[in-house]
Image (cartoon, rainbow, N blue to C red; front, side, top):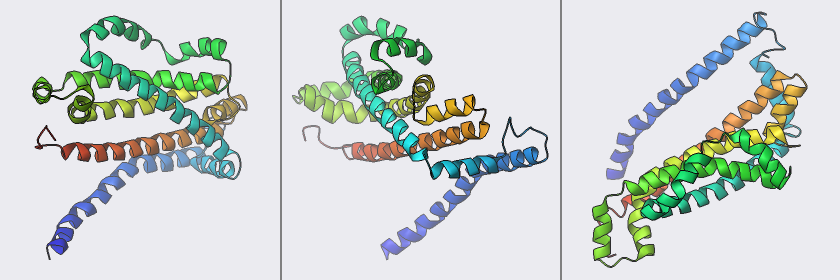
Length: 272
């Protein structure tokens, strides 16, 4: 009986989610219809802005051919670069966040490095690492590092020091302190940095593949520009947008699970 009543109570809220999602689709669908009409009426030349139906046809043609090869190449680069940059960002964030001495040594250098535009790294990485995968993954790792580092440091610095003091009173060592106090308290800020880093990883991917690549979504963008095919350029942009949204959604779902895990420690004995 209680289960049935809970389901009935939850259903109106679940039903209200669909109108909200439809509102989010209203603007892009409206723009697509408007653009289709404008191009069909000849108000915009199709060689400059193709109709959405033409872009959809290009996507279907790519899906029957090399699109999946390009998606696989770009996805593997983003995942590798993001993983390397995020791990290094978390390690340095923990070090700097917990040590004023480390901040004094590292922060001025990091502040200078993060001000360098992404394209400025490309010539140097090509000279050092060549045009292979290493230079592309390294560029993406650089882009992913700084959001994780900055948000991680801020999250650790904002932790209530009373929690740390109480944990030390109970004899917590460094590893136990990080696992039971620092990590749960810093999770929201860390995930903010991770989601920002993932978005930047896709941006840095395009910068890498536009310069030196024979496959990937950035290569499709470059190929569309060189062959004067705006439909190919827009198709690659749409795929990039969808992959970025999907990857961010997966990370957001993981964030909810970790936050739920953190909430299980609320009100528990810190000695546990």
